[in-house]
Image (cartoon, rainbow, N blue to C red):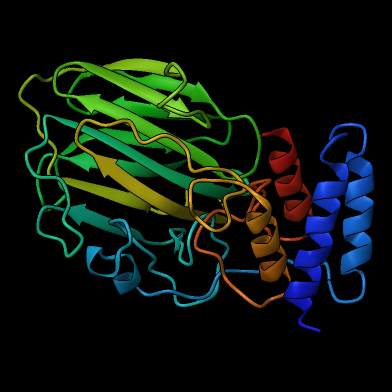
Length: 293
């Protein structure tokens, strides 16, 4: 019998059985799931397949910026990620992916995972396509994200709560407010910190993502899911949405199981607990998301 069909049938049966007593019976669901998987599931993490820069261009449907790695690395969303430990990717108005062009306002969001301790520059926005005149700089010292306006003004700083994948969203406005969200959703949450741009004539023409100037003492700096908009808030990716359809349901549980078993690499966000590995804990995390929705 096909293992995916076997698991799917078992999970569907479990979901229906427990639908009337979700909270009280959650442990029962987890135990039954473990029993279903015991014959075939090895508790190992599953890393993303290696990707080229071309995999992140607009022509292949991915977001601007991309991996400079030549080996398999952990990723947060989709099939690709970027190892920025010793490298960066520039997104500008002349890049294949199509970057910012004379933007008086730019909203940028990315995910990063830092290993070890240090103090590194993760992101910069520039006034020129050559990325030489910085407008603002985003740094991480192991406990805080800081957005420093290089065109004058006031910085914004927000604390980082754990050592997992972190989301960072910055809303910069020419001569106006700098809003910062760290591990929070700009579509639903108030900014975690605010600053101020100091130059009413600055415009953004390029952005640089990665360990700018090196890893700053960190063992590894990984990046994923970079998005930039002109005016619209981006928000966080949906946790547990392994299939990438903006909904978390039983199909995402099955998709995550398939990835743990090594039969697929999901296009959504299977790392439900956001700890940098995809294993049985993510299956259980996704079940809990389904049951709580």
